[in-house]
View 1: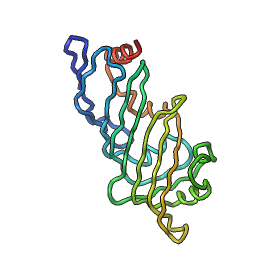
View 2: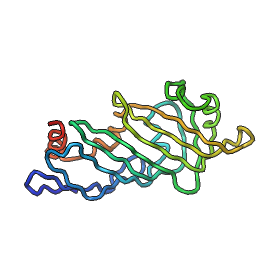
View 3: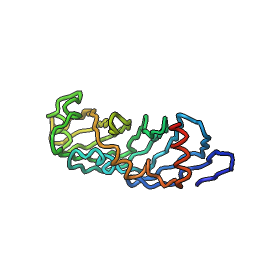
Length: 197
């Protein structure tokens, strides 16, 4: 929903933007020339965990369950970035199964044994999931994954926690929705152009 009052400002609201199987919305917002940085907070409802994790493109992932939370999108100096995104699972938990294509730097830098992590996520029954999203260098999206649960085939099904950062091309996310949200050309050009000076 867009409105151009004619004084150079833009009044708008994101309503039910489809992304990763869920919906994104925002409160009504107003953009005026010279606002830099400009941040739009998107409210996320019902995003599918499997589709979201797939953007890291690190291997074969299957997962049940959905996530809710917020994704702040900031325009600064003509650049668009995701900062401080935070999504959490609902009640009831779910299952995550992951088989990597190779062991990349993200897994090598994890705060626990890579071998343990890979064993655990072969068949992980989670009680809760938290996903954080932040844009890193070179247009990479740093996706933090925090899991609480168990693998019934590991350590007699004893519960434990997993914490890992995954990194994937931000372009994959752009192509799926947030930054390619269909703004009219003149509005998108005004926002990016003004922010870029």
